[in-house]
Image (cartoon, rainbow, N blue to C red):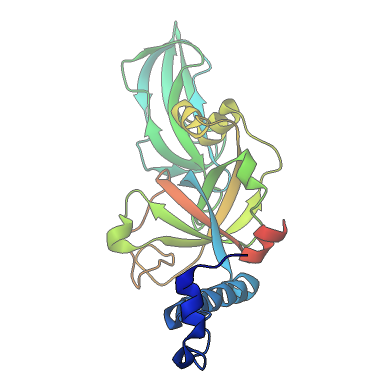
Length: 267
């Protein structure tokens, strides 16, 4: 076996015999220690740390029983309008009169409620089944609002009753007034069609809006009471300096139970 002359000369030098062999540079040990610390810290965090999870969905503020469209049972010309938008009334209240041939028909509300939209006006000629008004069902004027969220079916199964919810309200910018607080009151068992949503809200456009990504599940959110101008609790101390009304669009963030990072690895 032949060796290089320089290597042999180095081995023969007496001043080199007592020099310890260098296995690694100090900088390498430092880097190794840092990597080991990161790995250990990551393992501890994965085992004991938690990650928040949320499900976001659009919805609307309304009363628990929803709304309906008041329709004319006859064709003719509207000759009288006895309510206006925002009025509340008991069951059986005269709403419109319609001249149908030689007789005048009085159209009454089939339930107590509140007018949220007026569609008919004096002098208008209508067909049988025409929408005259949108009425929100309100049994008691003290009944509070709820938020109804329409959650994609694939995500609704993660939501549980009493989960906390943050609501961004269209009429109260979150950047200025914060978000409205609430908790999940109920989660629907079955996906809802566009027609079902339209019937509940009394608005075909809303039915189309909330089913644009498919048939969702209805999640009812109970608003948390608070000593504010709106009557509800907000993420800021006071919230908006005015009351919020029904039929206001919202975006909800439903907070789910936290998950440990290690669970994702195990699963």
